[in-house]
Image 1 (cartoon, helix red, strand yellow):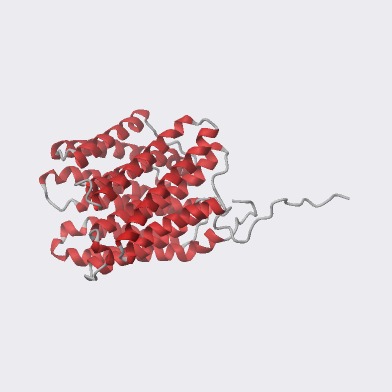
Image 2 (cartoon, rainbow, N blue to C red):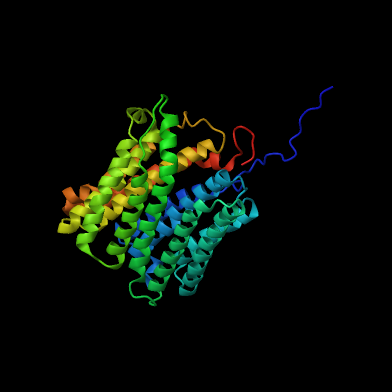
Length: 400
């Protein structure tokens, strides 16, 4: 008589810490709602925040959305992707939970209003980044996938940017806050462009439902990163307005060409595809707005939020929506129907934040408030539909 096959490692009912994407996507999304609500209370309604004793609310907002929300999403992505790239198990269980806890404490301590706790938050935030770097580096070194070290190198630069920010807050480096925050944005954009180049054409070719071969150009892959690095230096450190505009214009052409090569009309039938296309388009718009603003036509926050709210916001939400389905054994071709409204809400929020202040500058405060509300609504609906996906085991019964 044939014996039944027994799984030697039964799948846990509580799977939150079984793979990196689960806790980081969950807590990053939740934190983005909390942080945006706090920022709305401070900026739109004038509520005093306890953080004002050591840094400005706007600096806190920028830091937490860049080094809090976005880096947590990147952490979840990399701790999942590196396992696929290398075949080596990335951290899970207590090591993963510990890394998540460090990230949570670094987000929480600054809100308690005590200078000593802020210093602890700074140490924990840097410790989190160091732990992430080591967690990503170990599998790569173990299997000698040296080409992946470019990812690790950018993470090291993100660590340096975060350190610059804290040195600025502590009045050790005069322009540390500005250098750290804007460097963080450019470095995250570089990571997104590298990772998107690897996965977005793959997602489109296999997701539209018909045979298509997208166009890619190696010279764009290399030159777009070189010009982005040049833009980072001349914009953040050298303050060269003309070079900033020229390099931005070149990046409009390069990324616009790349996006044209990835276009096929079938994406508009798939929310998990068109959200990525719109997100990437917001980066192109951001470069265009940055080039045009050589003439000082609008606040510098306009192109910045095309990059952050529009590009980073839509790309991260689109990516985590797809990855969370695929890596929990669910059908990526049948995502929750609510995602269409989630993505549309965030896209309208991005347009509201970026375009409307140019058209109606007199209503600036109300426009910002509306954009904040739309972000909160989009991520709240997303979490409502994905919370149990993050917590429960894979639908196919496999580990992970």
